Image (tube, rainbow, N blue to C red; front, side, top):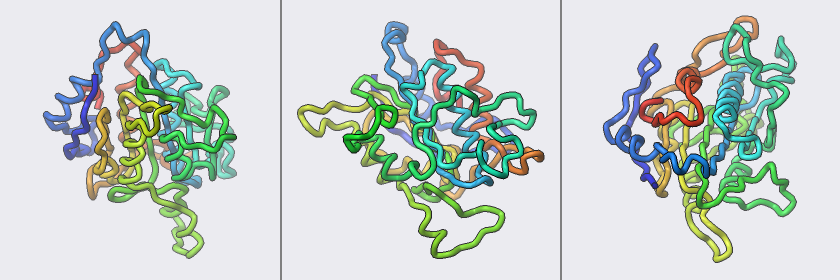
Length: 294
């Protein structure tokens, strides 16, 4: 069962947990994301979860990523098949009034950075180069197993990425946009961009058998991005078997959901907050489709 990329502009409805989805999107998702019962026991599912932003005021991006980390683990994907990339070490940030913790709600009921979180790429390791190498499998020979996406032609891959972005690009190691914004030559050099073309070409390499001894690296990819102008990141995708969804359209922002006044920062984005509200009601055998979830 395969699916083709189809994208229509989907707009966030302020104050609501719902999105406006085109009939093409709904039909496509309905046809492609329902897995027959006979296949449930042989699913080969992986997740790549990426927080691209640095610094304390981007706390919500860490919370977004860790929220999806806990969700995919609860739904049956083990740590050995999850690649977690965290650009900022929020739990150990000196501004964190609750050291060793990350929360996605102001009641602080669940520490998202508990004892069972395995971070595979952290700090400066979260780069455009490493992300593209991860997708395409082009690593240095010394790269350890936990930093490799060991997928094959039967693998279903969920990719979630969050951070700061513009039209058809997302920034890695972003240090701009804080409350004391200063544009300097050094600050501009500190971050880099991943473009829609970069991602599209990486997916094509994953889809192709580049050499006789290699094999296709995925069966299906579900790409989800929570960032400003998120849907434009998928504009250049052209490989089969990819379903893509963004939290905002062209010229639209992705907004935070609420602020934790004890911590002094926004702690989760709206899209992630409402997506989790839906996902928390699911179990691994739920027959829900993407159109009903989002």
